[in-house]
Image (cartoon, rainbow, N blue to C red; front, side, top):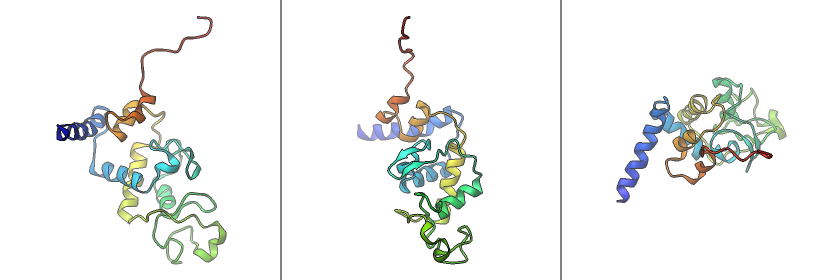
Length: 172
């Protein structure tokens, strides 16, 4: 019985994005996994909407105007002077690294925080592709998007569920 439930959840995770016109790819799966593993959710929230989080007031990935190369740089190097950590091992240790052309000595007290985990180049590529393809410019968070991220039956998604009832209007 438990196996059937797991199979159903797996099928829903594959079917919901396809039903929404978003084919599921291995890159999407890997990118979402890195998004969770690197704790992007802690600050940017699961849907990338940003706002207050454990790491502070993170920027919205849904509304960002940054291009893919700029997002890669930020994931690799963090954002100096902010709470956005760098994820490239040795990012500021080697003067040949691409982090804003600075090493630890040059960046001084503005060095971004160290990450909870470092990411390999393919993980950085995957998480940036996930953000660009599935979060950036997607507008408001939807129930279907929540189900695609968390899976069917997640209570997290209840707040996005359209009940079909409008709230009573005063005087009406």
